[in-house]
Image 1 (cartoon, rainbow, N blue to C red):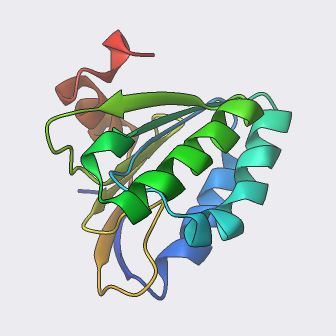
Image 2: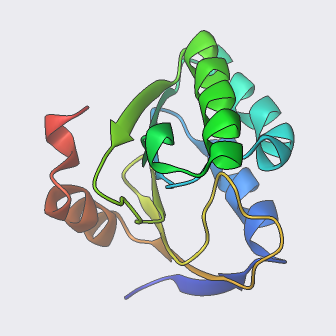
Length: 146
């Protein structure tokens, strides 16, 4: 793996936000959970991406598969995303992958729920390699959804 770096919950969001703001065409995020607290910090970034006509796709767990508290937050944040113009794809069957594919050039993968993480200890790997990123995109057969 060329250009691979490790991040934890304390270092992830600053680099991830920089990466998002550099996107020119497409953002794909898989995050099973979405919470209002995390979205308070990320919403301005997504608003900027949509303003610049970057296509944003979020794969997340169907809110009906969450406990009541998470279900309410997830539904509210999904509505906010849709109002912005973000494409939401609901997954059923205990969807649990955590990753992001940015412009099909940068891959983030690991244990951190990108759209909900607040207190947990996590790890994420950032891979800056177009071939590896495209391999993941193809492996997950994301092209059938985008």
